[in-house]
Length: 189
Image 1 (cartoon, rainbow, N blue to C red):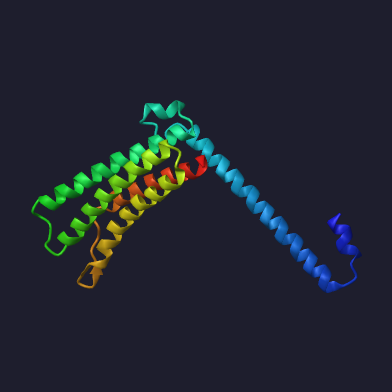
Image 2 (spheres, rainbow, N blue to C red):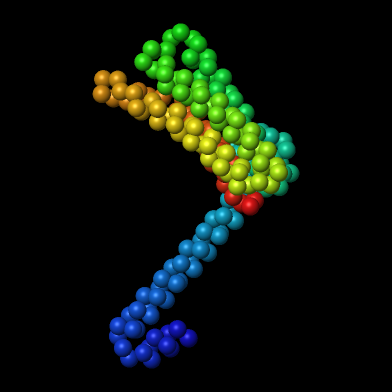
C-alpha cells in the first residue's frame, strides 16, 4: 500500500520525504525487533545457562530459579565477592609492603568496598520487597564504587605513568556482577 501511495505522488520532494520516513520507520521497527530478540536471548540464558557457562551454576539454587530467584542469587554472589575483595584489600593494606604513596588510594578502595557491601545488602533487601527502583540505585552505587577504586590508581603518577591497580580483576568482577544484578532487576520490573 505504501508503494502505491509513493508512486502516485507527483511531487518529487514529497515522494523523497515519504520514502525517507518509511525507511526510518522500518529501521526503527527492525531495531526494536532485534532488541526484543536480544533481550529474549539474555533471559533464556539466565534461566537456562549452557553447560560450561560460568554464570551461577556453582549455586545449586540457580538450576530451578525463576528470574526473581536469579536476581537474589546474583546479588548474594555480588555481596560475597565484595566482602572477599574488601578482605583482600585489607590484607594488602596491613601487609607492610605497600608503598606509602599508594596507601591513601588503598584506603580509598577499602572505604569504597565497605560502601559497596552496604549497598548490595540494601539492594538485596529492596529487591526482595519488590522495590526495584531502590535496588537498582543501590546496585549502581556498588558498581560505581568498584570503578572509583580502579580509577583512583590512574590518578597516581609514577614517573609520568599511571600506577597499575593491583585490584583490576577484582574491580572488574564486581562491576560485572553488579551489572548482571542490575540487568535482572530491570527485567523483573
